[in-house]
Image (tube, rainbow, N blue to C red):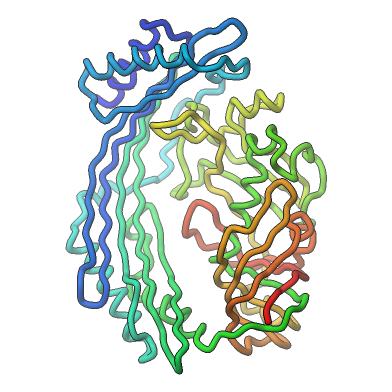
Length: 449
């Protein structure tokens, strides 16, 4: 039925005068529940099925495109939407770069281990019980844990069907499960919160709820008594929770759209050394069980492993077919697609290759510096690379953690930061589709008291 809806949308759009067309259908069945103390805060369950239709009509010097979506999949509604999308496209400005990809469509779709059929149907009671166990473990960890923002579980099964007038039609299923705990600690007037989480494609791959609760509580308690430090320049270590944000900002600069628009400081720098030797950044859409894995991208092209940065040298950007044409390059199979918008470029499973030292060894080898455990705000300019964000963490003196830190700002230039990474840790924790081991930047400005 799902494939037929996609095929019908494309067929009707072509009959209505489209030069090219594609459609994506996403079915999802999702659950969220949160427990706070003994109480269940909420339970939400939703089932959705939405079809997105993209139509491209021929103009004098390029294609005109429009996208519509509907959750009504009755045949007559699909026909109506396809026709209206064609009419809408005629009103849009021409774009000589627009168009579907011509080749390299995915074939022989691999099983990427994206879900376990045994996890479905899930038991709402079992998922709430997991949240309760995490919540209880957090509150029992230390008497200074006095409250919480709650412990939350989520589960989502979805099916993605994509087809285009170029003859591609494919589908895959995926699932995601998570458990999150966020306790509050209090002592001597100091109140702190922190969190820990576990995320996986399979329920059996989630960490035990008790471990999630204890880890979250441990992180909250260790922040009690936080204070500012005098403004200085010192080493900054990003832990495995905060380092991924750096990769997220780097991927923003590597996105083909930012590059061709000239809004990235990395535009035009392929082949240049942009980071220290040993810095290897990889995006792999076919990582088995990966949180960002998929057998084909949002245009039906085969996903693949792309080495974006190798030993510090920029090798390629994240490209869909549109941004690739703009840059006279080839797509890297990184098109993302929602039902309500056109394709765009984005990462799949993005990670920094781990080094050999553990986080404890990085700390022990740091004479003076800040271990960042939380970042606040979005102070990053991808055009200039200017970086400035609020931070909290732990202060390090002579290889030991001496006190928690709060209300400081860390600042630098992103390009200079990449070139001054002097250590990469070994722990790679996947909490989302972007992951990074801890890493240390030799020197940044830390603005405090």
